[in-house]
Length: 135
Image: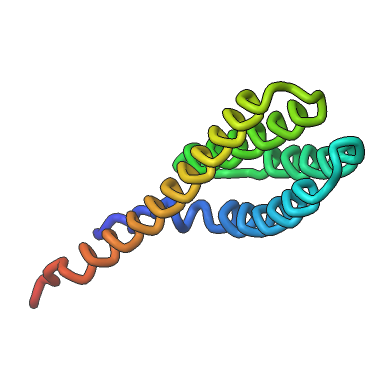
């Protein structure tokens, strides 16, 4: 008997990735609003960012997508912290450091998602080269 095929992470994480794509769109819309909001009026936009982050934190995800989730949440945390620092009129160097960490986390997120797709591509290539026994 042939063992059942092993599920790839991309398959296991399909719903999570769909949800994170959707949240990313809402996140970046909210960032655009926060970026164009005066310091004194940032409470509302930052509250929206915090709500989106809480929503993302509650997504169900497979163990194989921990790096994707961790990077997504880290990006959000650092971005929110940067805006909070800006609201408190903290030094620009601290604000920029948080935005830099947010950017690094966003790159890590993109890399982690890319790795999931690379895993699927590799599995597809391996499957297409697997010799089939002949009768």
